[in-house]
Image (cartoon, rainbow, N blue to C red; front, side, top):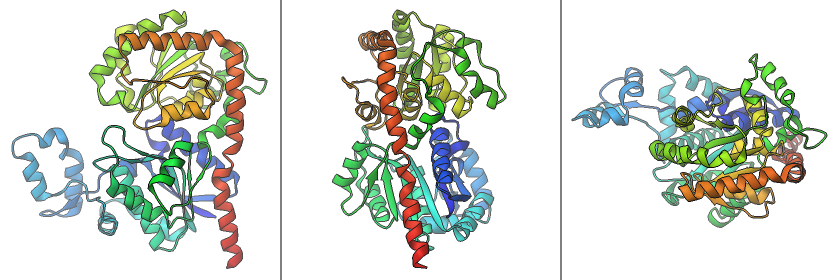
Length: 438
């Protein structure tokens, strides 16, 4: 089928977004589908201003540049901006949102391309990512995605919402207005799949009438690319080199010997000063590993690690590292400490054991269940001194377990990787039935 790919986030500075967007695209291509248009992460994360006293085009350019929280705090600035127009025209009213996007065609070429792609495609596939977190206020990303899904359904195009997570927000609770909006739309989808068992339970408990199936995250499908065919082996720097050569960049010297990785997390990223202090102490505690510790920022929110690098001397891997090269780095580490979902998946694909810190949902606890960990535990996003020592002790025990633990992880991840084929099977089966009926 000719598909419009909604939420192709490979343009974002985020290892997980790039990895899941690419891996799901590869699964769709392997099933014989053709992507004829994309809705990128930059489009989803943009604001769509609507002018009141000035035309939409000039207002949009002005608002996107200056109508920001810091500027709005200046005396009278917020009131003046609100009189001129809305900062973002997206809300829970999907019909109104569609009208906002129709207006945006006049000044935004990407939105014009979106409407053309909906007309040209045979179906829309959504890369669900972690967007179905029902937080308060509602995530603008999610409102945009639901709006485009509604546009597709009104145009008579089948909707396949795949590889999703579904969760309430651990800090703000469950936004029932957004939940109801998403549930109404997902009941009309041709297929809806989630990526973990907790999301499956959440949908069954909170979205009556929404049919869903669960398959492991598409990134597990990279097992065939990142896992050593012969099983866990002693550290070999040459295993990393091909992934850097593909990106026309040199393999950093920091990988000359076995190493440990320390990543960020979505909740740690909300409080950089606290995260910096906590991670400085954590680096000190990790000296018990007797391994160089490299910092691995999974997205721009993790760039507090720059200050951690300055204060501790720990090298930081560039955020711009290509997704597969980042995957190879993670898959070849001796241990990975992180509060992120997709980087952790890329790590375990090579057998790398992980220690997990809290995130913006259930994901860092759930992945341990999926990996059949004997003692699942989730440390706080900004660990205390005592927790830092416990994290370091857990990391050391995993490193000391050596090839036996890596072999156990590889056995599980290879099975999960094979199961990812099911993510796109629904698209093929339903497409085939529809074509046969025609």
